[in-house]
Length: 291
Ligand code: 13P
Image 1 (spheres, rainbow, N blue to C red):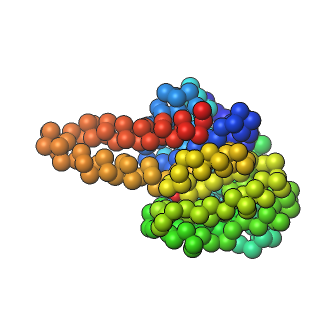
Image 2 (image 1 turned 90 degrees about the vertical axis):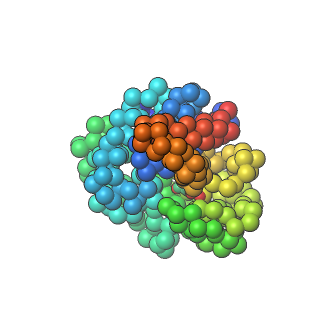
């Protein structure tokens, strides 16, 4: 069923929970994630990467995820992740995304605020094109920069974690940008961590004292569960996973492809194993964060 991301995450935080977001490059993975959410009875977020959304096929995927989300028996959001291209953002929302990370984190402070405001203005202007109106579209923003690659898991040294969020900028940034959720850089990286993650709890504590909007932790793959739960107590209500889901799916495909090839090129059977792998990871993560 359809849900508003900020309300979903705020409600989760109020009951001491957080909501995971999983990057889905394809419909098979998204189906598994939604089935895991339905089996656990917990809400979930389907993330679409910007490179995916930039293609015609990616827009069709977003439309398909919209149908998947609407037909689910639990709340499901469809988010365009890490987007800065206005044309892709507008098209993705028209295709069915109900929330966007308007990502100006590589820009200067003022330019970052301007990007988020520009996205909001563009969506407001397009409002008549959306079934639920522009006000139903939720904007996340990011302050501070994350090292690593969004789509490929190269190892990143925890010490390389780029551009921590400056807590002193948070209140002003949220107020002036209108961000409804805030992604933070607190030592988290995209991809695999070289060595143990070094989360800056002092920085997160100071950020959470500055704002009431829910915080978002990207780069959650590789961060131990107890640290994710600790982050939850400091206002992190949305937690983004990509790498760990991919690792599990690829390992399953590697292990199972030969047997399914020998079994009459049984693609249906192989897709079933893919579904089980993605569903197991999503369900375990949903339970850890949501219960
Ligand atoms: P990981 O690939 O490190 O899990 O990061 C995912 C993410 O932050 C998606 O926005």
